[in-house]
Length: 219
Image 1 (tube, rainbow, N blue to C red):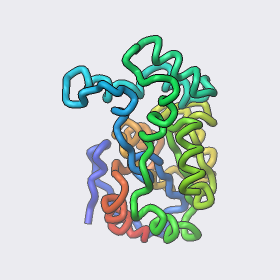
Image 2 (spheres, rainbow, N blue to C red):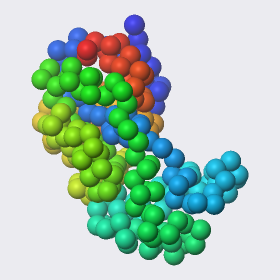
Image 3 (spheres, rainbow, N blue to C red):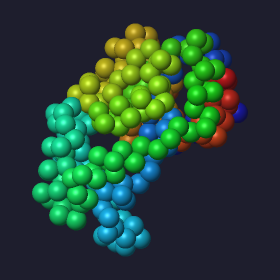
Image 4 (spheres, one colour):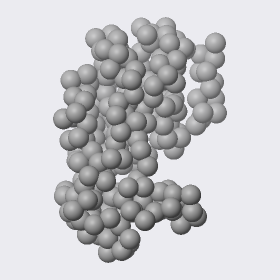
C-alpha cells in the first residue's frame, strides 16, 4: 500500500517499523482536540463574515504569536494588547477561562496509542503552544511522561513552520532525518519538515492517526 503525504503530494511506501527511530507528534488536533475561539467574543456570530474572519485570524494576532513564541510571558499582556485592537473581546475577568477553552480534551485513542508506541520508539513532541495551554494539558492529561522531549514553541523561541524549529528537532532527535516520522495537522508544517528530509504526514487525531499508524506498520 502506498500512502499520499498530502502536503508534499508525493507517495511514500512504508518501511518496516524497525527503520524508524523517532516519532514526532504535534499537540493540537493530533493528540488533543481543539475548539474554536468563539468564546473570546461574547457577541460573536460565528456564521457571519466578520465572525468567521475573527475565528480564522485571532491566532495570527501579534500578541498571541508573541505568547506562543516566548517573547510575551504573561496572559495579562496578551489580553491588554488584543483588547486594545478589539474592544469587543471578552472582559479581562473571563479571558483566561475563554482562552483555555480553545484546548479541548484528549482524543479517546491518544493514551492507548502513546502507550503502544512508548518503549518501541523515541517519542518527541513539537508544538506551537502557549504557557497557559501547556499548563492546562499537563495538569489535566499528564502527557509529558510519554515523551523523551517536549519541544514547545514558547520554550524554544520559534513557531512552526520556521525552519529553526526543525533544526532544533533534528538536534533533539540525534539521528538521520529519514529515521524520523512526524505527524501534524498543518500542511505548511509538513512541507517544511519534508524540506529537512523528515517523513512527514498531515493528519488529525483519533481514528485518523490510529489508522495511519497501522498503515505505516508502527503499531
